[in-house]
Length: 361
Image (cartoon, rainbow, N blue to C red):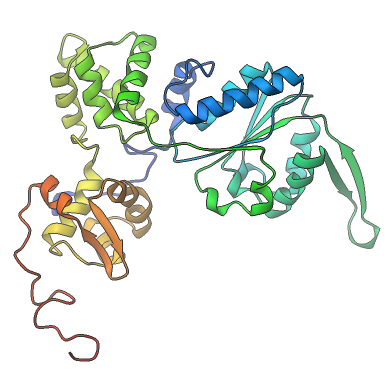
């Protein structure tokens, strides 16, 4: 398939291999989520450290320290927050940073918490600055100052809060200001999963979904899941559909491969958009370097879509590199796409033969 055949706009929520959850994912994930740390697959270091934090808190008879979970979407941050609440025997309140635009929004949530309750704040780095500053005092002193009135007559009324545990989740930990980051007693970074761990996730999900799958079928799906449980579960559901309609319902390696070929997910987890970016980079620009805007026009996508949706996985897989001069393809990209690289850069390419340098040399 050539680059001309790739058209239409794509975002992370619409892609089969996108890590962002859509409505269907949210409903299914609720049924598939593990209920305790022993059942949670992967993230062994995080599980061990978190288990110590929660056991110690239960032994003291107090609330657990505030917890910050960082990592890419789909790795289990929301699931871990629910497990923290379950392990502590406490209710959980779920909200997100973008939903808290004013300090009053946060004050309303905090004032309604009960003692020991877990507050899960997703995408905490997107919270407004006034609410963020209010959160400092709430986390440290379990107190907030509610401002009543405006101008010279404004009055700060202190409001005592019951002890609670804040679990913050972020996909971009670097955007968190140091004062907020320092107030978390436990910080954990979620890593991408190994294929063997994803196979365990797939077998567990298959049992819960009443899907028949053999070891090779699970391995085939795991290898195309980009190290992300959310994607593994989504691919499992699509392969299940294929197996029910075009086979006898049992998912084998062959059936999984045929199903994912229909959905245009190749053996490394690349989809239509990923291959379109690589195909344009290799065929049209000789492997680069080429500017992001030019590459996006060639693919027929928005600049932000290529940069934020396609490139992160291609870079992580070692198929594409970002350089000061532009995007370039790696030898692995030529091999994966089955295209023979040119013997030397064309004369018209930047920096190629026949083109003078910056000072004419």
